[in-house]
Length: 434
Image (cartoon, rainbow, N blue to C red):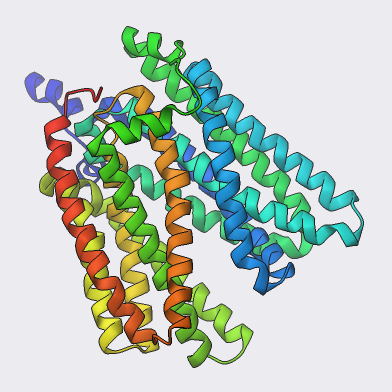
């Protein structure tokens, strides 16, 4: 009887078994999940405001805003790398997020004090800033996660952590939809600022708990990495593995841009009226976020642990091959709905967590410098390539089906690259990439 009582506390709960979480991981996992939830809620409060401001500046000017975003990313990326080189993790993450908060405060002042004639340009600058903010803030988050969790833990826990971001996205969208009419867009910027500060305090809590358990980790937290502003480029160019991740990101964003424009063409030709089109996009978001949340909580960790990072990473290219083939054969709204939902759910639930796990075996310098370059600069280059390639195909008279067929060989190359990255990841576990 005594023996049975003694062993009872060690028996995992039903929740622990469902989420594949150990008892000693709950605190750091909970803070990580809350960190991502607050970060994504703050971003999704800003995203609809950004989109509206982009439209207010003229739909015909949106491509130029995308190009301006790429230019801004090219400027900010080396500055961020320089900050990483000179400060320990706790300080440069704090500086990065608080600079973003300062920008939000300045935008609030501009939106509430500048004359109406200046608001269009304020909106354009805000559009570019939010687009850069999202990539950098999320990249820093996942770099912290790669620094905190080991390879085995990342395969089990990244799905649950990603679910926090999905829940935050739902909350942020609901906050903006429910409060923008009564509070106005400028005040919502301050709400986002508060959420970003709370997210930063979660990072502080993670650092204290992980550093308190491990003297080496505590030393790394207090140590600057050194190096220069262009280290991210140098690290990426020297490593076939990092170049492979660059290729994976590039092919992902090109395919995403192709699908974005295909969806826009089909929706514009099929659904009449702004309200009906808005309802379509809203319903797609609801399906995507709901399904993603279920998969992230109950499937992602188990799939990554059993199938491995490589096969999980390959799920999105495989879905893309099937989806683009389907759109090429049947370029109708129903096919777009199914493909869009399936692709976005696969990305958020499986591809993103497994892609972030690729960085876990690497050095801290690589996690913060090269990773940030890939998540921001390479991502935006893919946007530009996809947008201009799609425009060129339309100019040449290629129809919806033809553009979908064009994306198929790119997705096949993407699939091969995902499987290669999975093999390299297995070889790198427990090692540091020099």
